[in-house]
Every structure is written in C-alpha cells, then in structure tokens.
Length: 269
Image (cartoon, rainbow, N blue to C red; front, side, top):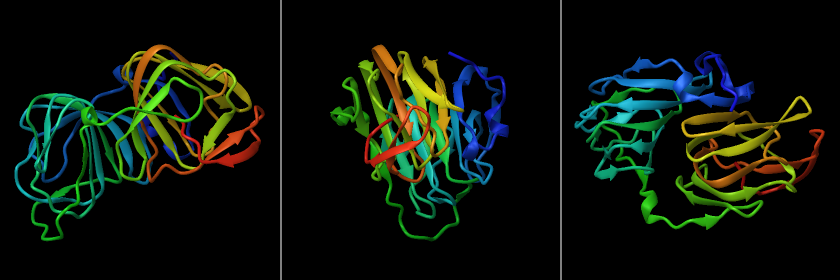
C-alpha cells in the first residue's frame, strides 16, 4: 500500500485521484455539529471544496440529540463499530442510514462508543426548531440483506444500501480482474476497505499502477478515472464500502491508453 502524507482535507476531490489513503496516517480533528450534543474525533478522507465531505468519525457514547429536528443538508451514516439510534431504528455494525435534508425525525444518539463513516452533502447543522415535513429515513440493516453477484469478473458480491444504488457493501472472494477492460464512471466514486486486502489498478497519465488496500484504507476517484484493469484482485475475502455520491451514474469501458471504447451500465468499484 502506498500511503499519502498529504492531508485530503486540503485537496479538492472533484479533480483529484486519491489513492492508498491510510486513515491511521491522517490528522484527527475535533468535529461538532450545531444542534448536536458533544463532539466527534474525525479524519477527513476526501472533500469537495464546495462542501461535500466523507469522514471517518469516532463517536463517544451519548453523542447526538434526543430532540426531534432536521439536518439542513443530506447526511449518510455507515456504522463500522458500536451502536447508534437513528430515529426509531438502531444501527449496528455495517448498517446504513440516509437522512434527507429538511426532514424532521426523532433525533439520533450513540448508544455505545463506536466508529462510522459520515458523509455530508455540505456543511451541516441540526435544526431543533424546524417545523418541516417528517423525514423519510432510509435505513438498511446489512445482516438482513442477501449477497448478490456483482458485474465483471467472478468473485465480487454486493448488498445494496441506498435506494438510488449509489452505496453498497461490497465483498471480494478470490477475485481476479486479469482479463477485464478498464472502466470509468461519469460520477465520483469512493471505497473504504473494512476487512481483508484488495488490489485496484488505476490508470494515471496513461500508466497502470496497482495499489494494495488493507483495513481502514481509502480511495477516491473523480469522474472519468479509468480503473479496475488487469492486476485488480483479492486473494482471500475482503469487504469494502463503495459509494458514488449523487447516484450510481453510468460506466464506460476504456482502452488501455485511456480512450473511451463503449458505454454500458456496468457495476464496479
């Protein structure tokens, strides 16, 4: 794995390929959300300078708010450790919640200390004085979902988490992409490896480079980045959270030199 020493918090991810990011190597910052009791310790995994960001957050027991309110921007949570109550649902390990902007819900509270991926559409606050409509929360308990085969080479599986198909829990088992075409998406894509080790080939300025990812490592691809060409693989079992902000988008097969070949609706990390 190649570790980056540059802090992703100061990089605009809209035009940057972030590879080999080790969460343990990034600076932790205290994070507060107006209207929420307590503070988080968070590392910024990637950030769009217009506001959207993805963070790995460590939360103490009791963090949150038991008062009904509404987030001013969309918030997504993927729990890695511990338990968190969101509305009337309790999220545990590998559970996911999408909370729409402006929708009122009964609050959220960390029931135990833990960690979660926290994705926000923009700088956000929790408005406890909001009198808007009731939120349509989307909650997925991943343990209740079945694995389905994902596109491309055999050995990749997924559990869809978001209603739009923009987020998934992705598993790899003896996955080999040796003969697959390079692909590129018309939207950005991020991947956080939870367990095991997986290798992704990235096309950088016409040259193929393979990066290895272990637990708590991260990558961000801006739209149009060719990836998952020959060399992409997982020897044993690996597990990752994969997300494309704004929706699944479309996928294009790409020639080795980077030229667009054909467009298909393919799955991919």
